Amino acid sequence: MAWILIISSILLLWIFSLCILLLLPRFSFAKHLGSAFRKRNVLLVIAHPDDESMFFTPTINFLTSKGHNVQILCLSIGDADGKGNIRKKELFQACVALKVPMQQLKIVNHPDLQDGFGKVWNHSLLAKIIEEEITSCCVDMIITFDNYGVSGHCNHRDVHCGVCMLHDTLQRDIEVWELVSNNILRKYSGPVDIWWSLFWAMSHSNGTVQCLANEHSRRSFIAMAQHSSQWVWFRKLFVALSSYTYINTLRKVK
Ligand SMILES: [Zn+2]
Image 1 (cartoon, protein in one colour):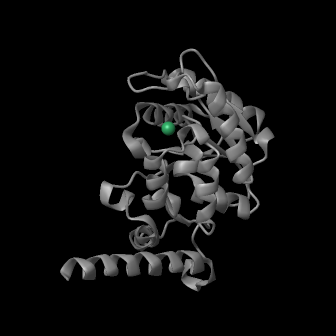
Image 2 (cartoon, helix red, strand yellow):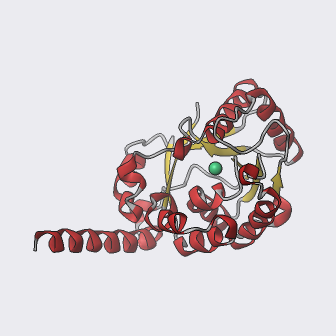
């Protein structure tokens, strides 16, 4: 009997949290959420095709709904399994699902930036490629992974280091925000994570932590489903259970 009670409680909490997440923009206390983002040219820097759909959908949905100009720079074609060309096409399709114009997506295929565990990406090379992109596209805000890179993948972590290296040397003022990596409990708590994320963002009254709720969490599934070569059962389960489908917590890099 006890386990039925526990499962029912978790289910109820899950549904209640999902309802709160959908209603969040209507609550007055939530109006400040995402307020740090004025209308801007935003560059989302990712390592692999599917990072945008698996981890950053709440951010992309928030930015596009507020009229920001979102551009995506993907630093590899994800060729670890020899499916690089297929994955490139899938990323373009995912961009359509995420309402990001296809001309605002750039995919890099550099011999020294190949997908894979144990493949070290040169931070100076990354900084140079990202700098070229922000100059040509007049970018004034960058969003990327934090130093753990959500899943701990070395390519995600290198992308973070490349962005930080660039940030330290840039002459002009460009804001850099990083996606906060959650511990395993929060990572698989789905919409329930909204409570902790909200509390954490509101406790930073200076606005250096922002909680972005996904009003269109179904879009995460639709976008990820465009990555047919990756859309296997465990990734379907991940998207359903992951808090990154429902909420993104972004922290401003100093
Ligand atoms: Zn990745």
